[in-house]
Length: 353
Image (cartoon, one colour):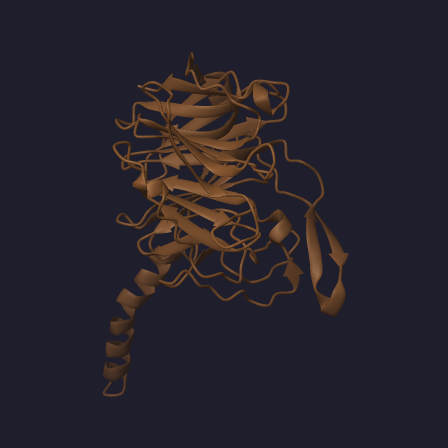
């Protein structure tokens, strides 16, 4: 009996550890059924008076006061990547980010609007630019300070405290067991640097999706651009705590093309039946645009709380390109395709509540 007492004490000490591991191992799985689409609330838009010129790649509305326009500039017909307009009278507040290869010039910018910051990433120069919009003044458009060049390409990213949270460009895992053994999410250091890992599969081609993050809550949403799957992460970020699939979920299939030095490039075999296209969030909710191949003229918006509970489903009679929430969170601004060429895109406001 004397030998059993120390062993029994050790076993008792392991109980909290095992319980913690067990809790961390639990993942809540939800299936969103097709009747969500059938019963979606159909919203009516209010068109805003912005007239596109066909160069816009993204348009956001900041705090009901500014329209922030990201252009696909060419250095000829369109010289500036960024234009900002006052919504009150559609006068131009200013322009920034001239197109070109020189110092202080840029090529093509990915963008993320969150909180009080607009974060931009030049995928050619691999530099970030952070701007803090202000409707009362324009000097925030004049003080452009790009970061030092980074070694990676960020397809989707957002601010996370004083770092960048992004989709790991080397994450890959499929239903057949192919895997790079990398987490889906990556976080930079405070200088926004991150070391690209060496992996068997070159998966940048298929690393697609949207992110929404609340660092204070320790919550991150990932919405898949290759399927109708969403994941919710807690502050650990290493694995999801909740997974939502559907409506009409099917695991993506891939094509593998061997390359140099044993690296295999991965490509998506076919377009998915359903997928997420973009997201937006504020302190109380997360919106995600959902697209289905059988609905060529309209998209849906799924509205979640930060615990992953579905709060509402809405149908919009347009193709969503970007989402921006109003200051009170009761409305959403949508930069939308309405058919035809890029100049046919429009900016709408939809009331959710």
